[in-house]
Length: 491
Image (cartoon, rainbow, N blue to C red; front, side):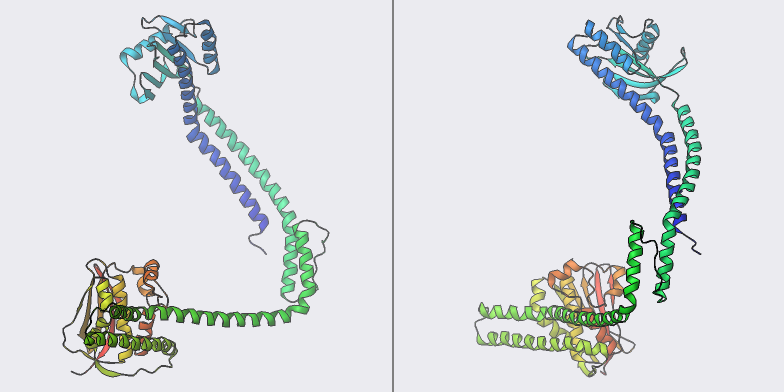
């Protein structure tokens, strides 16, 4: 039993749409019709005034031709119009007894009007709603001066728009109920004509799912979409039994090939991205010292030898970093053994800082490290050097504001916490947990700018897990600090 059939859904959707349309008409009548009516009347008054004012400015207001036009303007918009000269004598009027209009016009000029009823106020021209106690009718009135200083008064009666709204809403209610009732019956009937064949096709599909390929759709003479679908299902049923085994085999092999291809492609991209990111800093150092040699920054042999030694040292570090990148797979798969040694952590830090001195100067960064007091730890120096280089590289590229980097080693509970802090923008809270995910980048534009691949912190995380240690990040108001816990060595 289908709880939510297409037939019922069609009827429900049709009924809801029709009800919404009727409600929309209710709201439009109630909220907008009155304003629209008033706006239309105001437009008619302003249009008539503009036509009369143009004629008055041309001096033709007393001509016989304009008298005909004057009557046409009044008849077209159901207007009562009165024009007086400066001596309050009638120039033109659409009513025979214009005393009422004259009294109202002069009263407005000498006493003014209630601003609460004013709909338009221009230079020497006003439009307002008013009630004529003598005739017991509501009007929209325009009064003011023409460009030739003649006084003008126009008004048009306002029909009871609220009564019209109520009548229209009652009619919509009665008509809407009838239309919805008839519509539900009709849509149910026609929806049944559509959904009946669909249910037959659904039954055939269900039998095919149970590998019963004898089921056939019989109404193949239909020329609509359902007939096309029925013939297609029959054709599929005829061919499916003989080919299903081959299809499954081919699909399985295809999935294996695609998975293997994607795995190889991802490994290639991961490796290239990692190498590009991790070798950027040492390459920059080598390039800097090589350019120094080329430009003969120091002509003495001792300085040249020093430059060469730095270049050779950085080349060796690049080779070690390549080995470490290749080792990352072994670390994550558990095939790499950690070689613990006791070494001075701060000496290693100072060596890393010295290796990146050119980058630090280029970025105008002020770097602080703990005093020369040794801080011994038990760990793998090559892997910790990788950690320091990653933290330091990120700090250099993201340092802002005062551009200060602090590298400290804090002793706590038999552990040494290495902390690299840089001034700059804090990391968004929603990104903190994802920083260690391979290839995740908080600021993609900034990372592309300096060539980062987003793998540096994932290497740090893998190293920490291989040593059963912890690493993390802390946001401060003026910057960010990355930390790594190490086992304290004996003093």
